[in-house]
Length: 277
Image: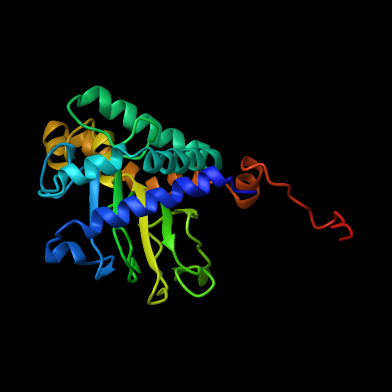
């Protein structure tokens, strides 16, 4: 697929917006030394569930609220968010519908939540501000295990020399140029990035949905404790049902052939001639 000049310029502006926002911000030590890595600011924003509150809530980022609001309102960043959403819908339509149904359902039940983007099924986003976003080995345990996060790399770096994505369980290192997007089950795959050159810069933008948000909805919009107190028998039934939830989640994944067909790529069978070049 040939990239348009307009799209490339849009992603360049988005990367620079994230970079400059980070350079102008004062991050707390825990915001630059975290599980994703060290030496770069990282903030999550959007709708989450877990870590104490008994209902979904909007993440608070004291001292950074205005900056994050401007980034979320940035038309170039919105364009990336919508592209990530469309890519998810194209390659994993069944799973996408699950995310879409959750978001619409949560919006009906809890009306005071503020969602990052109108045209995205993901509930939250992560900004890694750089200037050298090189992530350490990690898994995103808060994400839905059978779900996907959408990661877009931005910046100015030679992707032949660095910035690759490493996925340990698959034993692969993927070249990942500026502007690239990957859908990754980040809760189950240990992933990281290779270093970039000294004079280069790299930031990233990711969308994801909290696994706890899906569990909360499955419990009839109750925490585990509230659900057990409400109906012990139903809670026990759901506990058994949840034990095989990963199998139902995997059933929503497309095979490689299905994903390629969904993306409009031609698939050659082993019996088809490749043809002359």
